[in-house]
Length: 509
Image (cartoon, rainbow, N blue to C red; front, side):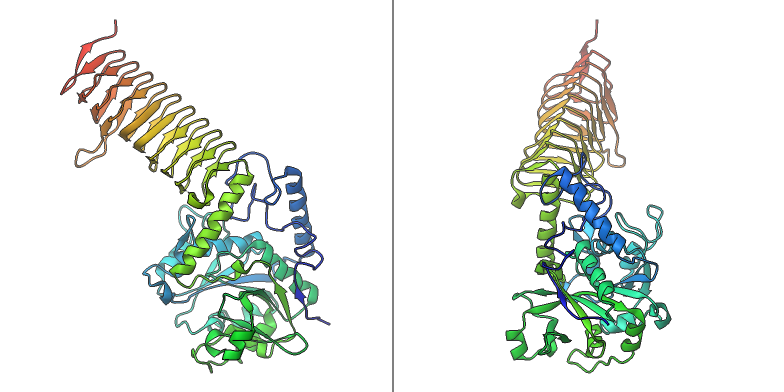
């Protein structure tokens, strides 16, 4: 017979004695998809490579104990209007650390081993459907770091139970149904595994996750005198006494016996102050219920408005930074450093304060970046430095042993090994060879009003201060320009050009 109990840190195999079950941050990681950290594996809690292996082994053993069979399906609730966000962007598509909110949820579900996933979406939010649908750059309904999904529309959103009613009852019967709120980006695969483990171990018709938190004000867990879950009371329907005395809250993470769920969904009414069909009303009749207490109340945070979006972003940002630091990266001031989840950073690189790394940026090993540096969708080779006050825009590739100095901006530019762009320069659509030096104030005039044109600067070239290179133009290997030159024509290898407009005054002997 199913037993009812709360599972916490002291439960064997859940928290406490076992290592964390979320992947360790190298290889496949809890942040989603392939690891952004090069080099050997380390454990996220201890930094110890040996412990990382033990952690992954424990996670694998737990997965083996779970029946993650085709009967297990996940439903992500993402059809809400998101009115409190006051945005034209659907709530679940607001980016957090470079990734849409809903992708964090989907990745956690996938990492817990659940691959059959349905998203309940609002048909008026076409961008959500487009994001979840196949594209030439993704697989079937795939985004970076997550598996395929199916989309079911809730045409008239009237609550969470109404959302689940959009799935035919026959597709729920005979299955285990994991239900997760789509605005819960802080939820981890480890917590999902706890719920799945408890659900299967107790053979309960329903399992839910809860947290103790004195800062929340929605979805209170009401228990009977014997400690069993009696019901869940939403904020609008809670009495003043319940608001004052109850500090255990519903996370929005459930696992159901699908047959029982389908039966109870039909009994739910909208007799409440919100006039909605609450999924939590199934617990009025669906008993016994296993309650799994989570240790981290942050995981229960639903992003309802921009204030919570900022809080969730800060927490996930710190998770990203901690994984990089445990992977061998020095981050001088985590409070002022912003790194997207898709960024890769090599070992022994130092990230100075007020650095922003976005998109698919790749930073090599033994680099120094910052302070006050912005890099987006760019590559920086090993042992290179960038900053302070530098900006590398998309399409920029920096080779090894390069110096990019202060107040320098590069876009769609390749810089060869050992070259230097020390300060106050703009290089756009430029191919800069190896061991070249760019003087202060150099500008490549790459836009003629209609087209972007490229500039080529050969190996070993020396560009004098305040030189303007009007593209398309080419400076040969070992060539030089005088200070203040405006170069409109190609300069041969080894030649020197000076003046406005620049003319060649010395050719290679």
